[in-house]
Amino acid sequence: MTTTTQRHARIDVADVLRGFAVLAIILLHAIEHFNFYQFPDTSDNSAWLRFSDKAIWDGLFFMFGGKAYAIFALLFGFSFFIQHDNQRMRGNDFRLRFCWRLVLLFIIGQVNAAFFTGEVLVLYSLVGFVLVLTCRLSTRNVLALSAICLLQPICIYQIVRACLDPAYTIPDIDDGPFWAATFAVQDGGSFWETVKTNLWEGQLASLAWAWEHGRVLQTAGLFMAGMAIGRNGWFLRKNLHVWNRVLATAIILFFPLYGLNNMVGGFIENPNILVPLKIILSSLANVCFMAMLVSGVIFGYYCTTRFSRTISLLIPYGRMSMTNYVTQGIIGSFIYYNWGLHLQMGITGSELIGIAIFLVQYMLCRIWVNHHNHGPLEYLWKKATWIEFPFSSRKS
Image (cartoon, rainbow, N blue to C red):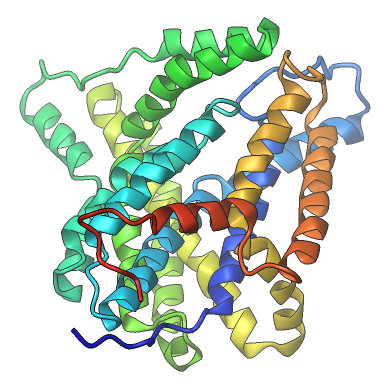
């Protein structure tokens, strides 16, 4: 078979978005104390500090809660398309190799999960197989399946079932003991006790939370949407008109969805209807706000010279997004958990720590990318991906 050396050029705006997402993630995780919700008593704090704490908490969760993660998921699907299509142009079938890549991601996710229970790489490694199953479908069918997943069909079924059968109750996963176990070791456990608990109870708690809050189907939908973005070249300057429609649609839909999510609790008492309905509304509202953020970054990058120069500074940070994401969890657990410093810090101080972590990571990224094409974890993931197996196709 004749092969070529064709490949997609790296798209800088995708790295900007990755950097933006990982920056937003560290700002959120810092004030959450990396899933260790223990805070000092602030009743004696000054009024301005209490105001600062509330403004930072509410403001960051409104801006980035459920949205930074969604950008990350969207870009995961986009990256799959780039890798898959690069191999297609060389005459190779990437699907089986990507399955192996997901196994490697699961292992990397376990390393991350040993420190931080709220990590998403394990979830990505499990849901990522949807890309293998759908990558040969037409773009229209991929987008249709993406929309179905984003609409949370399981929640729709639960609402319909609860409306038709008053005796129906939605399934409940009792993840409380898992979270209690992780909190106990965060607060008083040794390093090895923390690792052991995080890798079992912590992972069960995290995956149960993802399932109960619609993150599993939402992630699958975003993966497929990212793949469709890659197929259609929507991150390229020539397709800016697409983001006009995306932005307009997202703005129109976000405000009623956000408003309904905040008000339905006052009108619906049946939890078997209310809980899945709020999952649908909050999930769709977050996706719409995420689309607004992505559109804004893309327009700023391509259309405003000064803003483009500013956000382009995130490119090195985005190119090392996995390394930055994993090391954030390690650093954060050391700062806040009992096995490390067990630092007791309010929200404002915690946010300053998060900013400091970002700045240190950013400076290291600027130095690293001057000498290397990939971050350390990205390089190891890539090299391990292309280990030769008897069944594998060569990449060149």
